Each structure stands twice: as C-alpha cells, then as structure tokens.
Amino acid sequence: MDEDDEYIENSWTYISLCGEPTLYEGLRFAKDLILANICFRMIIQYVPMPHNVRHSLSLIIGSFLLYYNIGSSFVWTVGLAVGAYVSIIAVSVVTTKLRGFLISLCVILFLLLCEIYVTNPKMWQQIRGVQMIAAMKIISVAIELDRDLFKQMLNPVEFGGYILCPANSILGPWISFQTYNQYLEVKFLTSRWIKIIFVNLVMSMVFLILSNCIVPWYIDESGTKWLIAYRDAQAFRMSHYFVSSMSVVSMTSAGFGLTNDCHSELHVTKPMLIELPRSLVQVVIFWNIPMHQWLKNYVFKTCQPYGQFIAILTTYAVSSLLHGFNFQFSAVLLSIGTFSYVEYNFRYKVASALEVCCLANPCVKQCEHKYKKNSLLAVIVNTVFSLITAIHLAYLGVMFEASFSVQESGYSYYHTINKWENLNYFSHGLVAFMYVIYLMM
Image (cartoon, rainbow, N blue to C red):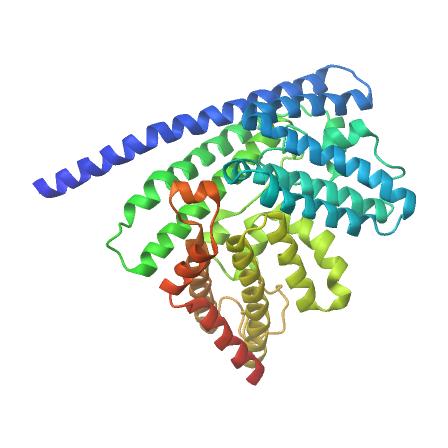
C-alpha cells in the first residue's frame, strides 16, 4: 500500500506540476482572443456605422491581434493578402473564367517559396496556420468570382477585413465571405453567448491538459510500440481538439456562428466521432468540418468530372500543399486519401455481399439491407471496421510526435519513414490487402 500511495502521490505531483503552467499559458492565450473579439462585437453591435467602416474595424483589430500574437511575422500575412488582391484585379483584366485556378496556383506557390527560400523554419511553424487560413479565404473569393457569386469585385476594405478578421485569422475556422459579411450585420441578444464561450473555453483547457500532461502520463515508454503509437497519436488529436475548441471561443466572442436560433451553434470538430470512429471517411469529415466543406466545395467538386479517385487525390494534394512543403504532412494526407477511398469501396462491396448496414457512412433509415444497423451481424462488422480505423489513426497520428526542436524546424523525410518502419508499414499493407480483396469480390 505504501508503494501504491507513493505512486499516486507522484502521479498527482507530476500532473500538478505540468497542469498548472499549461493551464496558465492556455488561459493567457485565450484572454487575448476573447478580449479582442468581444471588443469587436460590442462596437459593431451598438455603434451605428457604414458597411465599409465595419470591414475597416475588422481589418484594424485583426491586424493588431495578429501582430500581438506572432509579432513582425504578421507582415507575411498582410503581404499575402495585398499581393493576392492585386493579382485578382490583374487576372480579371485578362480573363473572368480562370481566376480561381490561377490565383490558387499563385497562392500555393507563394506559400511554398516562402517556406523554402525566405522564412526560417521556426518562424514558419509559428505562422503556418495563419497563412493557410488566409490562403483558403483568398482562393474561395477567386473561385466564387468565377462562379459569379459576387455582383462586383470586393473593394480593398471588404477583402482586407475578411482576410484579417480577428474572429478566425489566427486559429480559423474558414468561413466564406458571404457568411463573414452576414455576421457583421447580425444583431443578437442572447444569454447563450456567454455560456457557449465558457463551455468551449473549459473544453479547450481540458483538451490542452490532456494533450500535454494526462495522455503522455497514462501510457509510459515501457508499453508496446503500438500502445506508444496510440498514446502519441491521441496526444496529437487532443491538441487538435484544443485548437478547434479555442477557435469556437474566438468566433463566438466576435458573435460569429451565433444567432437567436437555440439549435444553431458553430461546430469545428466532433471529438467523440473521432475517438470512437465508425470509419476513416467520417474521421476525415469531422476532423475539421469547415475545412472539409472548403475542400469539397472548391476542390473536389471542381475535379469530380475527371473521376472519383482523381478528385480525391487532388483534394488531398491541395490540402497537403496548403500545409506547406512538408513530406510528413503530404505522406499522411495522401495516405488518408488512399485509405479512405479503399475503405469506402471495400465496405460498399461487403455491405452488398452480406446485405448488412456497414457502409462508411451510416445508412438511412429506409435502406435496403437485410441486416439493419442494430442487428448482431451489423454490430460485429462495424466494430471490426472501427478497430481498423483506430489502428489507422494510431499509425498515421504517431507521425506528429517529436521532440520540441523537431517540431520547431519541421518534420523530415527520415522521421516519417522511421516511424512507419517501426510499425512495419502495417496500415499500408492492410489497405493493400483490402484493395486486393475488393478487386476479387
């Protein structure tokens, strides 16, 4: 009992020593986002002002918030926004049909050149997410111009206010210009406002402590390589849930995503559907819901006429390029694209052969399968696929564990290969086996 008491005491000491500074830093970061965005909301809520002044306020507060958080590096985001606006105007003089493609190419090329030739690795890791959100906004505007969704080109103040909006310029999530513009005009008076901010702030702090302190503690280095892989992958997922919850805090503080409809609420990710996954396809959807919508609307649908597989690969290729010139991100994202494609088609064949509800996405209530979702066979088959998905998540997520120095400079080709080699390339082999079975069915 003395040894048990000592173990419990040491465990709580470790969690306390890790949790307190983690919580302090998390709340300090949250304070800046909340104060800036509540200030922004209060001004546009109660001070009558013209349309362009609202956008100017978004531009000014967003610029100050960016500078406060990433310092002088914010000039790269401002430079990207200015360069993109000038490029859109220039391209519009020549053509009104290829702006989406040309601007997308220029933006992605700019990000890659900055990462390779201009910025140092440490700085790029700090601004990678900010640049990606700005790039997604710019590309969406260019494509929507091609689709004639704007009566005229946005003026510089509208464009700048959208790109640098304090609600989502740092953590995201992406929203369309129409949605951004709509929420600038919304007047809301609801008691749910403070409640949603508080609940998501608490959730984000819980996820942060889980990521930094709890998850690394409950499985130590003496575990099997797959347990360690699951631990490292789960710690990474918890850090993602922290960022997602904090982005909801930021957006809600600015009044974005909030209406008087009690059933309307902003969702960025759904942790329970990822931690207890039905399929890798659903993990992809619920990992980052706004980014999934962006990729589906602006990339997948554009490439769909060239075939389903080409559209999927192009979608994941664009996603990996937006994350930067990084072999690790590219390898993981392209692997997810391939895995989910094989899983989707394999499960379709299994569902047809066994007449069971085991598709990658849940069946509708009136499906034609003989064995419905609550039948014993359906439960067994779906449980097996859920376990396979959990293995894939450990296999892919282990890639994002590394020392602090490696995280600062980025992940190398050798880091990626060594991680998968240690797990015997299990998931890649399993998916190849499933694809062979699929072809034979």
